[in-house]
Length: 290
Image 1 (cartoon, rainbow, N blue to C red):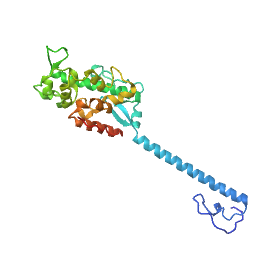
Image 2 (cartoon, rainbow, N blue to C red):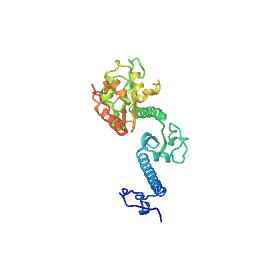
Image 3 (cartoon, rainbow, N blue to C red):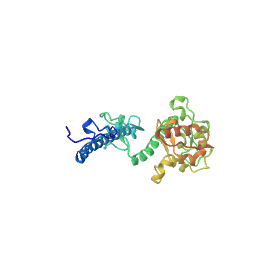
Image 4 (cartoon, one colour):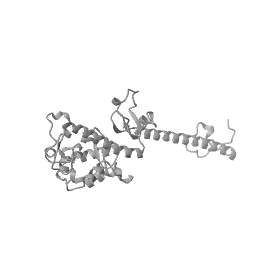
């Protein structure tokens, strides 16, 4: 028990560090004893602050970890998806290839692959966005090829054709069924793989009035001809969902600005694009289609 002499006076306001009366230095006349009591309270206050700070850091860190999503290649869906970082980390395979291997149906049976092949770095994401559009385009081309095509002999390009309407429309998704213009106007096959009939018709009606190679290059994000890296995400198209479903195609702001004329009557694509942007927290694209 402290033997420090005390006198009556104005008490010190009750502090959380004061556990019992022996900790109260108010009224203690001996300077050494008073300093010892004050130091004891200061140490307790310091420890209390540090414990509170550690608790707050742990809480904030936990919240960030839960909310953090990163883009990953989903092998089963052959598409890019945003998944929680913790889920991606558990299945991270640093030796996995950037581009998927040959489909399992064409190779000997192996152990099942993990559903999430790897989380993507920002550099990988840019390349994979380009690859995903290429993959989507090839998938749509494969579907449309079931319809056959009729070459047009008088055309200057052997690649130009008209696309017949199938006797069984169910052989391709409704979004890829040829329009009346596709059946009548000679055109190259890249037009047929755009998963929106109005967009295709706009392109067909403008053939000869724009640079077809430039449009296709912008759709592919410069995969073949190359853009400066800073422009790739602003000029291309992203295919998030099944290739034939236009609700999974997102247009970049630069693409909408440059090629907005061919989106006349395609307001739904702009709405879909803004829906994808909203999921990432990006501002919507405000553009009045012609």
